[in-house]
Image (cartoon, rainbow, N blue to C red; front, side):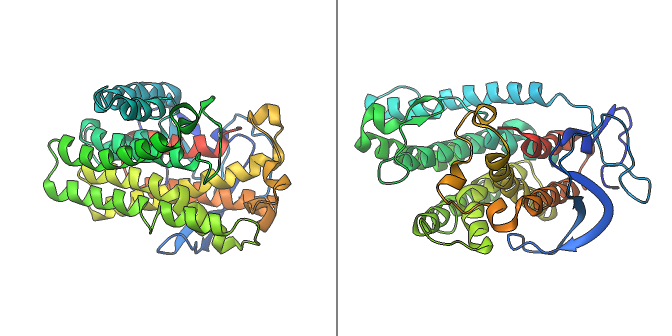
Length: 364
């Protein structure tokens, strides 16, 4: 179907209006091959502009087509889905013996957060025609793995952090030995949960999803990103190396969340690969935007120390590409993500369109 064609029965909003003041789209298509994608992709060029958008309809292509979105209450959607995810996570780890390790697991798993990954998993399931219930066990598993990575990241041997989401880190509350074991237990439980709690999905699809999760967290995924990141400290990092670190350290698990949702929802091979490409775009987009905000926002606006990357001489996209090219790259990633979604029913894909916009327009 046409890229973001007008959706009958919905009140529409221009995509450019939802991107806040970071990116604009021009109507001149170009071709760009990204290293993190397995195929060449067609994107729209991005104007190097940082001006605020006027909330009015405007044409953004030479063919008089508009990038438009169905009206959709993204905030309400996120809140409703998060409630379901939190209940499912609470049910997944009841308090039982040994008390200490289960208390530590629950402490970090139920500490809050936006639940981006599990909600993406559920949204991907629905966009290919499945019911969200099919993906909830996989969604919980992704959050368990993500929580494990946070617990381990915070340890003194890694990032040595004292706070996570405004609370003392797991090892500060329960001790380093229990924190390590709690993370290990969450990782193990993630795979058990998918295997034993998934209902009304063929065994072949369950095994395929488990394979995706294993790949995302192992030596070809999160671990690979972590080890290269550690080895790169204090060294000059190329753009290719930076992309590798972020794609593996952060992007692979987000990709697995989306892909597992599409698998559980009954998506065919083409559906799954389009979802994979979408996820790779928004995963990298998150980091590019994060790097841009670090050099363009104040500490008060970010809610954390601004300019920290600059002070620590950390490799970032603005540092390696320049600020304007980093903005352009972010816009290209948004355009590619939207392009992948254009092949699905627009109403079902609305949450995923808005996810991309949410990442692009965030201010902290």
